Image 1 (cartoon, helix red, strand yellow):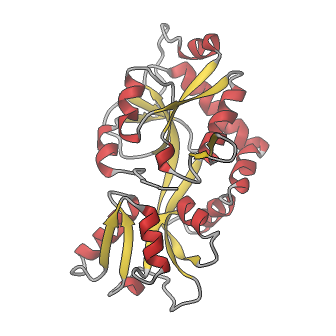
Image 2 (cartoon, one colour; image 1 turned 90 degrees about the vertical axis):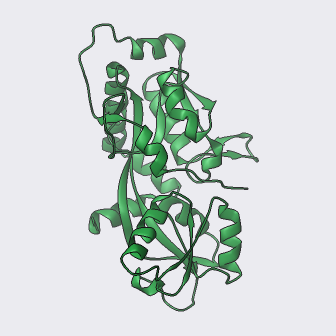
Image 3 (tube, rainbow, N blue to C red; image 1 turned 60 degrees about the vertical axis):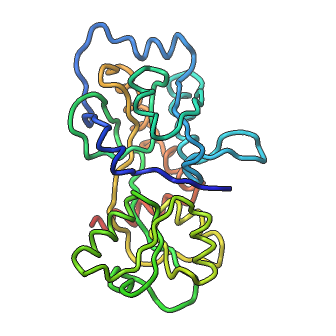
Amino acid sequence: MTAKLFFFSLGLLSTLSFSPLTLRANPADTSLANVTRRGSLRVAIDAEIGAPYVFWNPETKRYDGFEWELARELATRLKVEARPTPIPWASQPNSLRSRQVDIILNLREEGSLDANFSSSQPYYRTSQRLLVRRGESPINTLRDLIGKRVGVIETSGGAAVLETFNKNRGNAIRLFASRDLDRMLAQLRNRQLDALMLDEPIATWYARDRTFAITGQPLLPIALVVVVNQEDATLLKAVNQAILDMRREGRLEQILKRWNLWQNQTRLKAHPN
């Protein structure tokens, strides 16, 4: 599976303007009623984001991934069905504005400038992690990467972390940026790269291959949220309540555990920085 990953694109996020947990009274708001009447929650989907977020499962012939499972659970709690709406990641904000979809997932909680969009309660807290070859010379910190060849996804959070580190240390790390994760994994396996800096869910997914291992502490923790149009206060309220109920009832924990991501949440609490 080719994974061309665009999540946490700094350029895209600068165009996404939303207010965390903004609820403005609007007597004309029929967003939740529209979803209920339609019988479906339209969810923007880009399978190119890849596992374990959302991807096309060739075995089941269905979408899969922890975010798609979360979207289905949200829809169930709103008493409707989740309708996947395939839209390229970069086009999803405009699709939300034009009301082709009701919600977008996989957006970070902070970094907004104005109030075109509103964000939900966080459903997951991600971070950046180092993926290395198992059993070789220890790499545990950014300092351990000095002089090493490290792959990053272009414009990702991992790229931002290492580019900032390099600015302060004269490009001490040999960075290789690409949108082709499969190629970089092959380069890591073949010793053409010494490490990859990846989103923690992605690193966890590929660490199932015993060739690789995750090392070091989580970096750049970011809360992920559901995003709706700012005017859709009733829908946002229902989404927030569903996330809170999922957390309280242990359903969110069940979903994350199924994708081996729950331990990451407890680790981030222990290492908040």
